[in-house]
Picture (cartoon, rainbow, N blue to C red):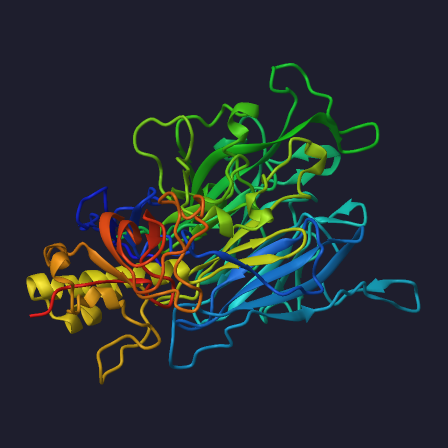
Length: 604
């Protein structure tokens, strides 16, 4: 989990490591190449993505995906997948993926393997003696509103509202308090018009308070209204016309809960309406488009479906006497009216956007980016053309699956929604490592703990060097400082070390016999010995600093002594002094669980 106070550690060519502490409360953007900010964006970087075992839910189109935090600190979080289209037919089954914690050892650690559970099977109801069909849950559907929120007692409520079912649109609301196993119809005919793809959000801590906005009504009428409910969807109140609907409505928007601001005494709840879709009657050249007809029959709208880029903060006072004026909308950014092909590349929708509330970070996959991008969950400072300044998150291109590298939205709007990658964040709560969750037409991918381990190794290295150079006790660093920067496994009271995590050996700067001609080099800390790769004939050497650069055929043999020419993070450019292997190149100092090189110091 990200910390509000992050440490940033970077190393330029030939410079020593200089830790930099950001201002308290300042948001940390994704690090540039060669930098590392302790405790920030642990779901990105070299975390890698692992594919989850298949389930009966896939392949699936136009479904809903909701991430639910664990009920306790450092407990397993969950991903709920609901409804959608399977083999051309609408479904209403619910599947739960239990996502175990990573980076946490000891105690009551969960099963490390993600597990699928079918919470509620597909059910089309039963026909009684009079030909009436009765349902125990919501009708099979697609393009519906869905959200979940935790309650103060640790449980959570899941909602399903509106959607498209059997060729018609719905305006019902259903709720479940047991993870989707059993459902209760809160309202069979809501006062808002039947629609599909509305934005829906529940207030964390008060899950019976709901906000519904936008959607697409019959005959492709794009809705621009907003409604609130204080009783879990049983009754609804219409809000005054929101400013974002002055020119056009929207559907398939992301509606995300915003964390309370520090020191905020107001009782207002904050939500963010992010992006969505609208029907653009113009193509990129400004001429009318006849690409797609929405609505069917002789009516409907002709145009091109495009993504919206803007963001609107909604402050809701559910205690207001006049419910119509319970909401205040504030635009993030100055360019809220301009839209179309030029800005669609910055667009986000329900499927492709989520929020890391602890780190005040919005996460989304933009159409023209290879991997997810991040933006501060706050209004931009000064004048800004776009609502948000998205920055590419650090990643290892070689470890990304094809689904993560593909464009979110194809050029052909007829395929919109069929190649969308859903982006969610599984948060295990305070003290755990957040995991990025990507779902697609065919499966689910999870980020691992590689980035967390990289941060922790560097933090331990920094602590040991501070102990040697500044006299800061190691137990003070590990017991008081590190918990403020990173989620930590338990500390062994006997040894003071972290359980389940091997401390980097080269941090300790242990003395060892050094050839006399290399003593002066060892005294400067630039002499290294290869200790890894013994079972593979040595360690991998690459031409460049990047992990994706060309790998050399020959390996650097175990036991070789090398001279440090440049050190950037955990990547070392060396010159071979003794041993066998390429005369120069770039190597890694460590892997996730072991060292590859250690520093050699002279004895005495």
